Length: 135
Length: 129
Image (cartoon, rainbow over all chains, first blue to last red):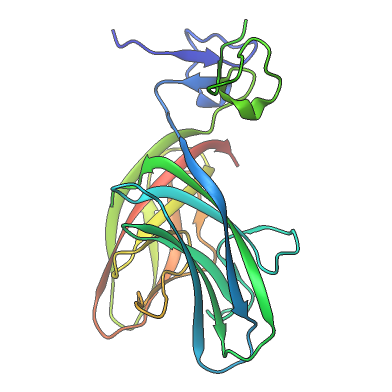
């Protein structure tokens, strides 16, 4: 018999309950494990048209594999965070705020057109989990 | 009865801030109920609908990470480009990536003249939708 640790919700039987929706914890199911989190500010010039310009910030994830991560962005440091990617232009890739991972870093990008727009700062909020994506 | 595991430096018997716990049985955990990996090829210079069949049987919360041709990884319909490298394959946000009871579907465009292969990993979460 396989040993398990199961904690059911109130009113449910941990011995017999099979729906994960009725369990607080079950060792049958993996969970996301926090590893690190923080903020990265990326300065950029607002979109004006012209050549695509990438403004980028990075944070080293410090793992020997690419981890599960998730990112929110406050595009003008006004206190309003939305999930990445944040696309300001319908059906186009300019005016985009997004994040990606490589072997070393989590990278945060503000993609605009041109370099003559008003200066602004995007605040990225990132969460890195210990879970290995393994691709 | 409760089961609690506090963070180092906090007393599990007296701590009242849930953020100072590693585990607390009063609060549900964010369970990964299923995950899987695979790949697909996008034909040169085309936009195609793709489906990842997971057969979980219930519509739940989900996340998909894609490994692009430039070996960068991101989730859902995000980009991976910067001034040094371009994926040339775009997971389209319109129509949005979506999950039904048994499959995740989305649209992908290959902006190059050669076939491209993307690798993916999906996660399904215990969040009934």
